Image (cartoon, rainbow over all chains, first blue to last red; front, side, top):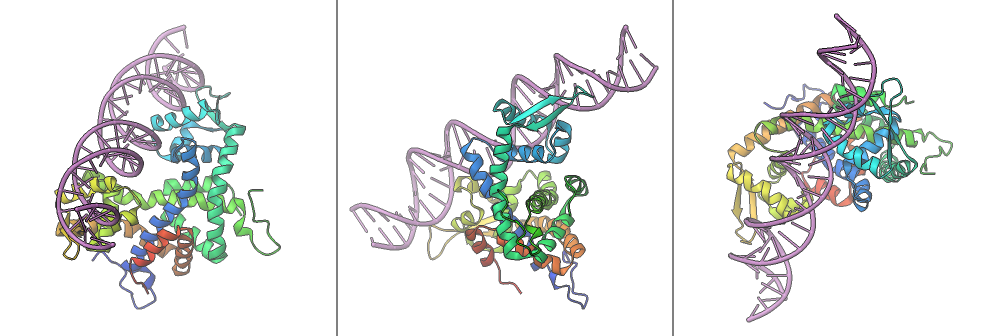
Length: 166
Length: 166
DNA sequence: CTTGGAATGTCAACAAGACTGACATAATAT
DNA sequence: ATATTATGTCAGTCTTGTTGACATTCCAAG
């Protein structure tokens, strides 16, 4: 019951409930570490995680539309709008009216926005780099494989579209 | 600058900024998948992620104290108390006064609590199991290695203390 | 050209879940 | 006796999510 990993005779020990539980807990604790460094920086400047996410994905896809960002972040436009408004007001993001379709707003980071993005992602990458180094290349490959397999198909699509990689 | 992964001649390609960014994004999207299934169940019964976390760790360490739970979850007692109160009121958690130190409350899941925990963790494990199976045992080992390396030392300690594993 | 619908923005109200600060109670430790 | 610890509780705040309603702008189809 509830298991489904009955060790069919082979080495399926990695699929035991106990292993899965530990994986779940590892995911939980690791995610807290993952967000800890940027959170500290954001707190100082009265921003939150939502601002980080917006800045991150605008940096990754300059000129992206609000709608596209909504699809990636999976929040309501009202929620995103509040965040974007403060970012525009504070001069971190520029929303340019589309030339082809003038209803659309194309989002770009300003110099100031790029600076914050770098500050945040430097902190996050630092931890990531240490973890990667410590675990080694093969572990990193496994890490990525499992993470991708955990994503919802829609999210995986967004993930894959983000950047051509080696 | 901001890099630090300058390919010292060897195969340190897995430490490039681009690889690290993709890792960060993978972590973000995967975590959303990770929480999606329990979230759906919780929503139906007017509970949130905070309730899930409490129920999970009480199940893992029956008889744990409020203080210990606070340390693991890293929230304020007021925040945890609100969640625990509803869980006790709804008959999912029992808070027993300590025998040695009567200030402490030892927390246990009731039958009803165990049932919810199973429902939630079954859903979460199901996704985990699929991902693990898809990625394979070696990938899972790498996954776990990287996650552990990402944790804050305090959290890693809590993680290790949770259960002896093979 | 008019109208319908899509993309966006905005206002208002609300909820979960985090926070702080202050205070109460009970019990252990000094 | 007093200080400290463990817990609970009240009140207020913040972030980030939610709905619902409505305005604006503009493309596209009739």
